[in-house]
Length: 208
Image 1 (cartoon, rainbow, N blue to C red):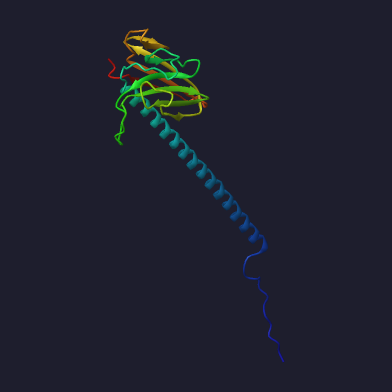
Image 2: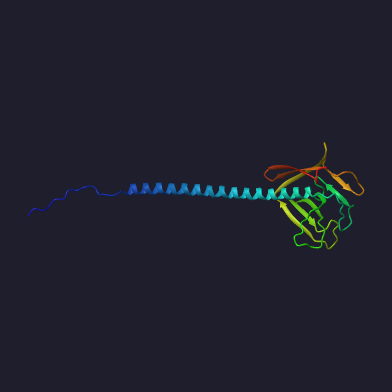
C-alpha cells in the first residue's frame, strides 16, 4: 500500500523576529504620540495662562483709566486726620507704597442708596501687587466702608510720573496748603518678574 507523501513547505505567518520588530515600531509611534500630546497640552495651558494674564491686565488698566477720567478735583480728608486734605497725590511710589490718591465722581448707584456719587480712591503697590482701595465717601469716617482689590500681582516694580504740559514729575501734590493745578496726565510703567515691561499713559479728568 502506497503511503501519500506530503511535500514540506515553509510555515505561513510571521516569524518571532518580525513580531518583535512590529511591536518595537508600535512602541515608538506610541511614545512619539504621547510626547506630541504632552507638548500640545503644555502649549494649550501656556496659551490659557497668557490669556488669563492678558484679561487681568486689561481689566486693571481699564479700571485705572476709568478712575482717572472721573477725577473730580475735590479735596479729601483721611479718617484719622493725619494728613492734610488732598485733591490729588501722586507718588513714584511713596515709602508706604502709595501711588495715587484722589476723589472720583460718577460712582454708580444701581440700588439708589443714600450716598454721594463721590468716592475716595487710592492706588498702592504692596508685596509685588497693585492694589486699589476705595471708600464709600470722599471724607471717610472710622466706620466708612472700604473696599480693597488686588488688580495685578507678580510685579517686580511700578514706576509713575505725572505731567502737565511739557513738565513731568515723580511726585505731584495738590492740597489745601499746596495749591496749584493738578497734573493733566500720568505715566505708569509696570515691570513683571519675567522682565516684561508695560508702559501706559492716561489723561486725568478732561486733561485740562
